[in-house]
Image (cartoon, rainbow, N blue to C red; front, side, top):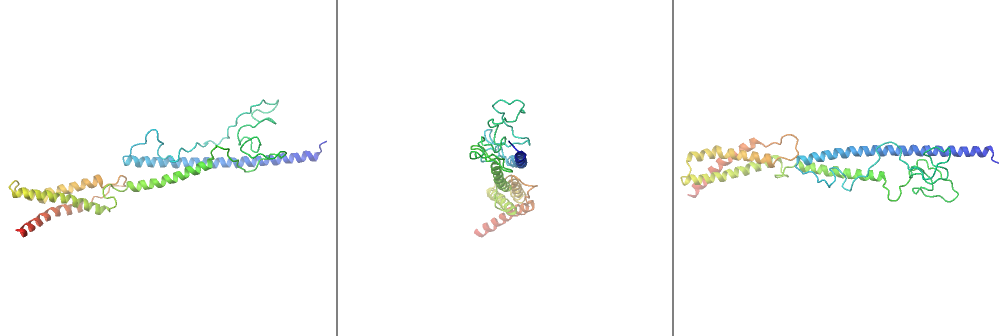
Length: 291
C-alpha cells in the first residue's frame, strides 16, 4: 500500500519535470527569437545589398539577369532555406490513434505513439531526434538542451551562418565593383590631370597633322595664306580643344562618380592654342634650315 512519502516523492519528481520542461521551453523560445532576429537582419542586409548592386548595374548599363537566374544579391551557393518568420509554436501533427474519454483534445494519450516532431515531444524515445535510453530508464527532458537535427534536415543556425558568409563575400565583391566603376575606361590607371593632358596633346597632334596638310595645300596654291593663318591660329586649336573635351566626357568619365569630374579646360586651351602655332613655327625653321 502506497504511503504518503511515496506520493510526496512522486509530487516532487513531477514538479522537477515541470520545471525542467519550462526551462527547456524558455530556452527554445529564446533560441527561436534569436533565429528570427538573425533572419530579419540578414533579410534587410540582403535587400539593401541587392538594391545597391542593381543601382550599380543600372548605372554602368549592365543588363538585368535572365528570368532563370537568381535575383541580384542572392547567395551564390544556392537559395537560402526559408526560416520561420512568426513567433508562434511549431505545428504538430495530430495523433493517429483515438482519444480516451475525458482526455483533452490535442494532447497525446498515455501510451500512444509519437505526436509530431522533436519539438512536440522532447526526450521521448519514440522520436528519432533523440538517443534512446536503455530499458528501464525514465526519459527526462534536458533543461536548455537543443535536440540534434534528424538526418537529412537542415540546421537553421548553420544555414544562417552560411548565408552570412556569402553576404560578406558579396559585400567584398560589391566594393571591388564600385572601385572598378569609379575608374574611367580611358587610361584608368592615370591621374585625372595626366589623362586630360594626354587627351589634349593627342587632339592637338591631330590638329598639327591637319595644319601640315593645309600648309602643303597652300604651297601648291589650293589654299590662301589668310585662310591658312586663320585655321592655324583659331580654327584648328578650337577644334582640337572641343574634340579633347568631348573625348574626356565620353571615355574619361567613370561610370559611377559623385559630382562632375574635372576636364581641365584651361589646360586644354593652353595645350591646343600653343601646339599648332608652335608646330607651324617649327615647320618654318626646319624648312629654312633645310634650304
